[in-house]
Length: 307
Image 1 (tube, rainbow, N blue to C red):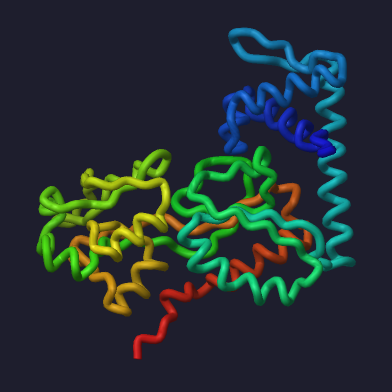
Image 2 (image 1 turned 45 degrees about the vertical axis):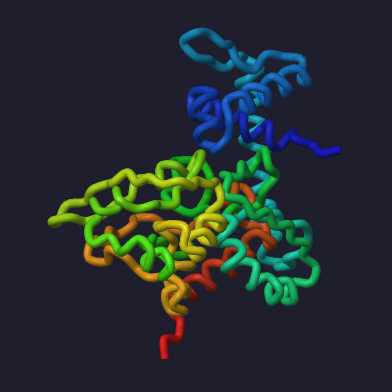
């Protein structure tokens, strides 16, 4: 049976440090009900109230003060113990649970796993490919690869590489619908769009007369999957704003054509590996993150051979 005591301690400590359940949920990238239920379960098991709750917030009980000091000491001891053993034992054995976006995972992560697993034969790697945002605590994920801007949180992160999106379409689409010459001309075109939590990406940035604008686009197809949007773009269904890790190789092969290059806006976003701070020094986590950082130090799609 899974023992959640350390997770409960971490959640409790963060509730106190951030001042509330909602703030703690935001810091962990979790949900407020999960934070609340975690504290309730812990209080029920201990048989005491750790927090006085009121409409103005919550404050520690006497028992809560004592338990907070114990939690802080225990979590610090764990970090120190891991740091001490890491220098003597660089074994990347055990279970490693990784989450990555579907398209980036299939295109860039999966092809590199055979080599990494061969170099680390005692590692058991569990990979989840999803465009949904993985919750490291609730989903029991060790390392999550995230694209875009990171929200403020208590998670540790390491940047892998920059993320730039490019407006593209297939030659078949352009042959039937023509090429938009300005961003405003996209109103007359079918644009492939994100659904759900990624729908903010349906406002495409452009640079017009030196100014950055965000243009809402529209079209007859939406999906929560970037891989699906990419495949429909290649099939000539519509225009897409596509990550350069897929766009540049497809342009080189002639299966996609870049559009509106004169209006290209620079994305201030990136790919990151994120993980819980107390797990940073675990060899299996640190080793995998180091491998990703080194792999994408020069992004493969930028170092491609154009000869």
